Structure formats: C-alpha cells, structure tokens
Length: 252
Image (cartoon, rainbow, N blue to C red; front, top):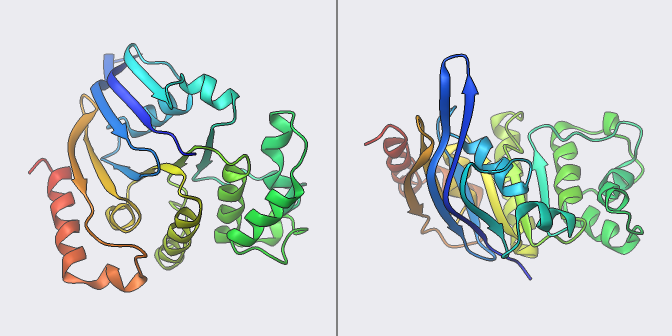
C-alpha cells in the first residue's frame, strides 16, 4: 500500500566560499499516498537537496522529513522507497534482468523471478531480458532503471530527472510510458524535473520552487483526467497551464 511523504519546516544550509547558503528554508510539503507530484524550479532552488533529504541521503538542519511515518533512512532500509536518476547507472556487465534484480542483492533478499518478469513486461522490454546495457537505446536503459526502482514494490518512488538526457521526441514518448506504468502501480511518486510540459503531463500537482533561499512558491493542481494522451501537449488548455507555471517560476 502506498505511503505519503511529509516535510515540515525543513531547512538545510551549506557552507561555501561565499559564506553560508540556505539551500532550503522552512519548506513544508505533503505528498498524499498514491499521488504523483512534480517538483520544478530554477537551478539552485534546492530541488536536489529536497530529494536527497527525502531519500535519506542527507539530513535537515531543522524540521522533519518522514516517509509513511518513518525517517527516510529507515524507510530505505525497509525497502519502502525506490529511486531512478537521470543517469540510468546500469552495471554494464549485468543483463537487463540482472540489473533489475540489483536491489534484491543490496537488501540481501532472494531474487523474485516472477516480479522481475512482471516488471520487464510492464516497462515494455519483453525479449530483452538477456541484453546488456550497451545493446540498449537510451530510452530502454531508463526503462530498466525505472523497473529496478520498482522491483521491491516500493511504497514511494523518487524520480530525479529520469528523462533529462533524452531528446524531446523520445522524452515525450517516455512520459506516456511512465504515466502508463504509474497508473498500473499507483506508487506514490515524486518527480524532480526542469520540464514544465513533463510536470503537467505526469503530475496530479506541480510544486513550484523559488531560489535563494529554496522555498515553495506555489502548488498548482493539474485538472486533466487520466489517461492523458500525447495530443494533450498541443491543446490550448495545456499551453495556458504552461504559461501559468512559467509565470510562477518567474515570480509572477
């Protein structure tokens, strides 16, 4: 069953040559169980810092972060969270199915062959089970990374610019695929992205961040019903929402 993410009054500072920098200041955010939330903002607004706090790779200076009532580190140890980055980071000597199985090895759990096969089918890679990463396209490697993040059936999924390195055409195709995967899994998802169109297409809510210090500027609900089709990108309603979010990013 999916869990929620909660940040309450979270601040994080870093010391640099120019002095103390507030990466995040007083950030509070609730991601509801089963929801798809997108986080967008300019470079340096603290998106990556927030994500690192949420997955347990860093600790806040103030405030509290919890995943399903647990600390992020504890949730990760229990296998409740999964993450996929912009770089698929596949092990080049392991096949598709063996890369997907990697979290089982890390958590010292036996491989669940049925779950691996189910995910290979879910991400559309049936027939490529034995292929090595060097034999796959960029989009296919990202599918493997997403399947790997889902293999332990996590209750919360974190996606950090998973399609940022792909060209526009392939990225939109992957947006459609990710929506399909999410609609089948209904895992609570937090996506960090620089793409306004990607955020609108995928998310239930778009959280707009502002920089210096990193904070939440606006939260915008997305009204489009699912499933959303690629044709949505070209509609006036979509364009209007893009303009609204662009204005929020510019501080208007």
